[in-house]
Length: 272
Image (cartoon, rainbow, N blue to C red; front, side):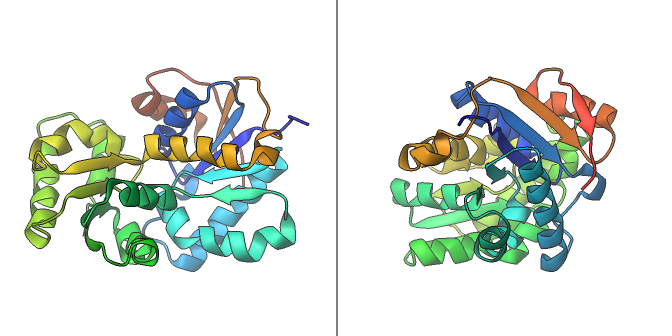
């Protein structure tokens, strides 16, 4: 019976870029987006804390009727996804599923036949080494170079991402990663905020380097997941409706969401 919206979770706003691509590719489904803005950012928190917060969000979305939840957050995907999949789902919801954003990006690398991958991400994502570990597991012959970009998320959320001042911070980290890895042929934007910086990032990346942005990849992989798992697809409701929840101020979420979605949305506050 089709009565389950697709849940999309992020610690903040960046997951809206993933939501936008998923809805753009599959507009017929219903969606619930949940942002834990009151406890954002997750990147500086320990594995245990991120796991606890993420599990609370997943359980909340399950209680709202979701059968499938996408962790549209690199930190949550890095620090919590595997534990939730292996330890919690068999106990609390064996027929429900939680997916992340790291695996789709890594799978795409294999299709592109990359030899040296650069990862740009938050401090938390880079320190977790989740991309490195996932790449080594699937493609052990691919070289990986990583660079943490702590100023990039604030540039986006403070609406400075398209201003001249942003160029300094973007150029700084692009130069650093290519100094460390001169043979990089593919660059993964390992944070869901970074697509808004794509125009400026492209200005400083060598021409022949492929830049992978997660939103489109996750949307494509979700569509493929539904093809492989029709039993899950048949549970997802087809009303073309999206609801948005935040653990912080609905007014602030509504205002900031316009940066990512280019539209005005209605937002409700909830607690985890």
